[in-house]
Image 1: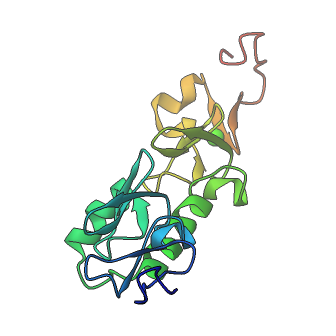
Image 2: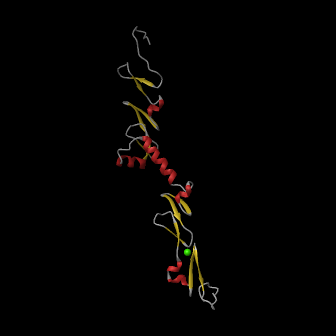
Image 3: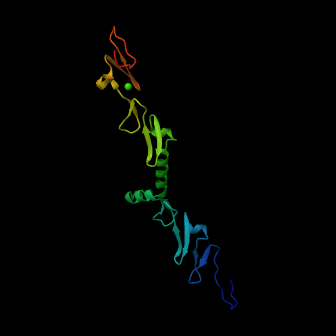
Length: 174
Ligand SMILES: [Ca+2]
């Protein structure tokens, strides 16, 4: 742009600002959000990126990552790529919901703040894997309370009596 005094003055494209040397153009938040993923603040030294709550600024100064992932990132410094972190978040979200594959639970699945929690119906016990339900063999303990014979069934058990005896209505006593 020509100035009234006969010289030239530089101008910048929209979103850029003329630098102090009156020649260079510097990026501002008005152009592509200053390269920031979330928030952008114009400062003397250029755009400064910020992140929404629960997010932390990545070491690249532009990208925002989930805060607990940021902790993982610093402990696993080899896997700093944002793509890797994204994959990990998605994988974890997919795994930790009862909506997908019943959360890996054999029977009952419940979504909790710390992830899924599996549980089993009466007569079954949750295995150390936290997912599988196994029938309890009631007959192993005190013969299941049966007077004579005890027969384990899936989810329950049955008492029966020797020949000549009849099972009473308590289904234990002969
Ligand atoms: Ca049983």
